[in-house]
Image 1 (spheres, rainbow, N blue to C red):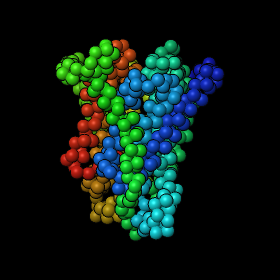
Image 2: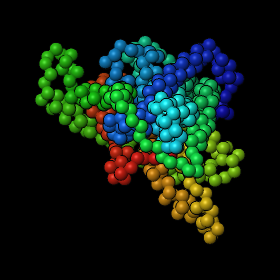
Image 3: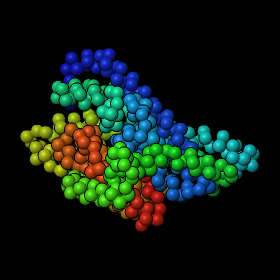
Image 4: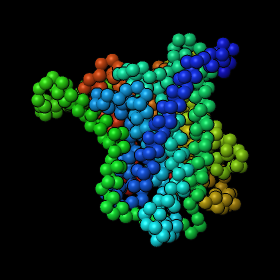
Length: 500
């Protein structure tokens, strides 16, 4: 794409409109990341380290807002509140990404040595413990907030929907999309996206450094896992606090979609009483219609996402292992390269796929489902690379060194030593790639092979006639997204190690 850049494209980068859009996008990202930090850090502490009621159940449920398409959160709240424009987009994206901070923080709190905590408790109680632990956990929390910022500034669908129901709120991703729609010039699209790519990298690279610092800050050779802290009279207020982001980001949106699928809002708008029997019948009809109209799209979403995860996870294991087992300089270079797909705006990723693959030589691939698999696997391969690199770092090198001494080659060591030890992280990486592929919208809008998916069907339905059927299809998609993680938890009897 860079070969198509002209001097006129470079000059256009400094137009006042682009500068203003970049400033507005940075503001959106800061707002979303700040909200994610404010709710995510205490949430992670409460569910991981305290005797808050229901902490064991609320902890896995806290990941649901991240797994839901942020578009669904927006469409669920739009009829309920008057907030519109940038504030609404920041709130939606903040509550959607707060699980990132919560997950990083929870893992960091669990790595604090019990001996240090007990000493702080004796010195000054719970307040003293928090003063001691916060500096240790803050790097991990800021790493999560940095990733939340990167997600927010690259989001296209949520600001687009917010603009469709209220005042126009353009962000930088809109300009990338518009530059391609108007000119179909890949060079113009790329040069337009460069500031956003640079901004994302400037966010994600420090996030990796912060996470590494958070991982290493609290571990010692005589580490002892800490026990739950007693909140005393604060147990119920803590539960109420934890339920706020969970309700805003998951429970209310899912509940609202059920009400819409049952036609209850339409009944209330008509001025009549609520007829539960009619609502139940409408709910059944809505799901039946959704399955009838969109069965193929839903099947495509599942198939593309499973195949993308099957492609991305083995490659992620190889590269992630190499990051930790090669020289430090080469490993850091691999880590940066592994970060690049996540740093590219999804809209630009879709444009690049169209530009690269829509040629006579590759037309058969471009028109097939394989294109969607390649698009999704490439888009989210960063997750298994980075997560499995972190998991590999926790393994004792001596296991592999001993196997090498007795003649085991690198492939055999990877398959027989590393893979069994990382099965929880491998499953978590698979689920994470699957989930994000199922909810991927921004890049899929532009690639015809990826248009035949459930999320695209919901996106079109929301914009061109939202009704009970669209709500039912959104619920079916949510069910398909959450099912793999739920099955793992049910049968494996342990948490997915997505943030080891």
